[in-house]
Image (cartoon, rainbow, N blue to C red):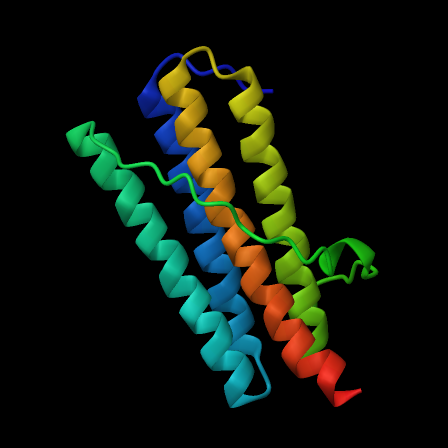
Length: 151
């Protein structure tokens, strides 16, 4: 586990993760074979960019507002077989990839919160974990609406 010497180190890691997620969703949108897929993943890419901008603002101003809302976890992604990313991924597989990715990000931020040396850092990591849980829930709901109801 990476050691952080300052809040800026934490924010740099978080911004890098958000940019990686934005790039991942942009790539899924570019390679999507339906307009629904393109739209869904483009929206997520934009949301991740918004998170990065929020983190950049925290870094610049030193101010942040933390939310204490609890996020429902349907755990759909926990029971689905992993898929390998490819250029010709189905909507179902893309949703599974996204769920797995968001769960991994959530787990990372939760582990970082447990290791945080200060209460403020712990809260920042908990807030970031909560954002990832929200993303996973959105993909789970989409999966439930589209995949389960079509089958």
